[in-house]
Length: 278
Image (cartoon, rainbow, N blue to C red; front, side):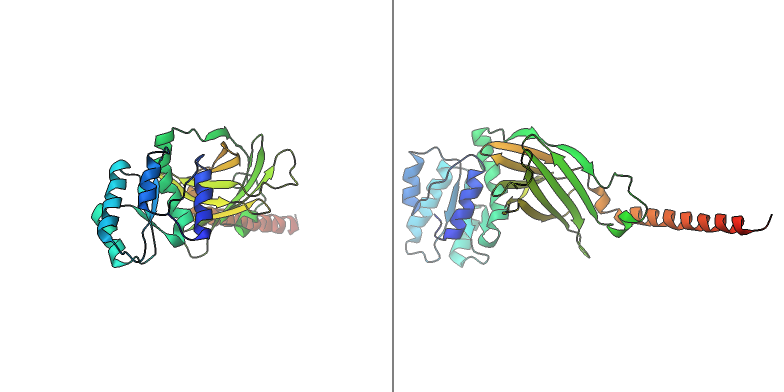
């Protein structure tokens, strides 16, 4: 029951990437009648700002919770009205804020939908073919890009170029990437779903733009994975190496810088010795 078109589009994309469809009901009574005709995995409930019949609304919510225990979510404003806040608290209903719909709704729905449907999402695992952090780059190059790590993955259907970057003066890490078609690399994979997951579950969902690009931000994750829906129900998995380097990057930089200074000092001494008369 969602009145805003932009939010309906976001929900449609989220649900579609799970291999499901969603049905829009105009009220709780219509939603209850749909439950008897449709196999329903979860309900996203938008409570009205102005409630004319609180008793009827209370009864409808109780009926939904009885018929779908643990599978009802409330879509709420950042500061819901006292009446809505009371209903959420009374029945301990999980909720998502409108301004974080694309980020918070995904993990809520995933925990409800997948156990019900038993979907196996991943059909392919991409191979890591390049990690700039492990390459024997010239001295000083890593120092210039101390907080950036680039990875390239390959799968039968795609090539993914991603980079992790530690944000300045922040504990957060930025992840930016681009997905290209493996057989036609000049054509990007635009309009496909990319899911970012941490150790405890989904962290966010993005749709690639016209250039096949996407981006995320996260923190306190030792490793992450990306799930990319190349075609409907055809998902490719990208697994990142351990991200401990993000927190210890200063140590690596200091070691490289010390090595560079030692090398320069030794070269100076060597040249000095060569210049002395025998």
